[in-house]
Image 1 (tube, rainbow, N blue to C red):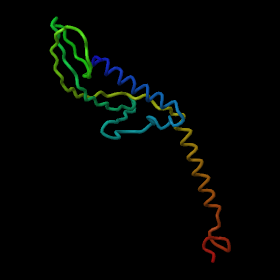
Image 2 (cartoon, rainbow, N blue to C red; image 1 turned 90 degrees about the vertical axis):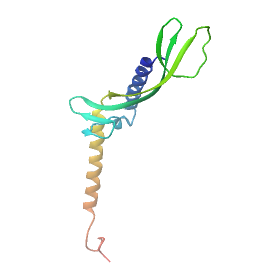
Image 3 (cartoon, rainbow, N blue to C red; image 1 turned 180 degrees about the vertical axis):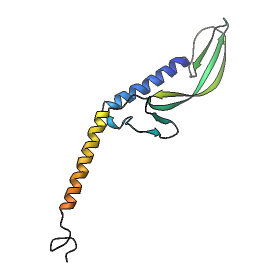
Image 4 (cartoon, one colour; image 1 turned 135 degrees about the vertical axis):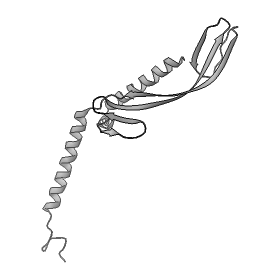
Length: 141
């Protein structure tokens, strides 16, 4: 596989996987809204969205055949038939690509936040409704 094809497929599958995960019941948690820098490979910019740094550490081969044609390919083990004479060098390429993540579904997050706030409100009301003192209270003996 050529290096450009490998990079394109990898980044495309990352974005596709995120979009697929966002479509599930727990999708509200996938790339949920948050401000600022969260760590070494995530950052959020209000104007542009959330970015992840995708690190690549790839072994590549640089091939030159007798005809003089060269190519750079992701290194793999395999056998090729033929009578071509090739010179091959394996190298390591390390680089990072900033990738804008698809926006999470804000409506799911808003609904989840509202449900959590309602649950807390009901819990607080039930605690306030309990007697504190007197014959039925927790301080009664």
